[in-house]
Length: 150
Ligand SMILES: [Zn+2]
Image (cartoon, rainbow, N blue to C red; front, side, top):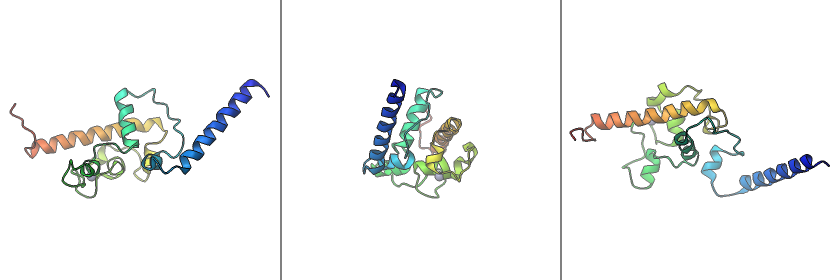
């Protein structure tokens, strides 16, 4: 057996062992629901801010209403943009009707596919997050929630 073949076999065996532990683990299941397989995505084309954003979304550590409510930082967990259902990462990325114009991929896709390995969706997801921020700030300003006289 040649050295490159041996190295490749060891690498593949290690990956397989890691995958078995990841599949059987009870920890990190929110993240597992989004990324059941090893990440082969290349982040090189993304800015540092985009990379952080994507990681937060995958770990569900994103300040959506459900997350804020869980830590008593919001009165309830309902989406403040559409008021139709709990605001979760999945709701923001796939379902919120107030963010439809920023969404360019098929909404039948699940979160795993949307946050998956296709580089061409990162900019769309980034646009959705940016649009959500703009809408929240605009609505807060219009409701007098932010002091504009400073
Ligand atoms: Zn919504």
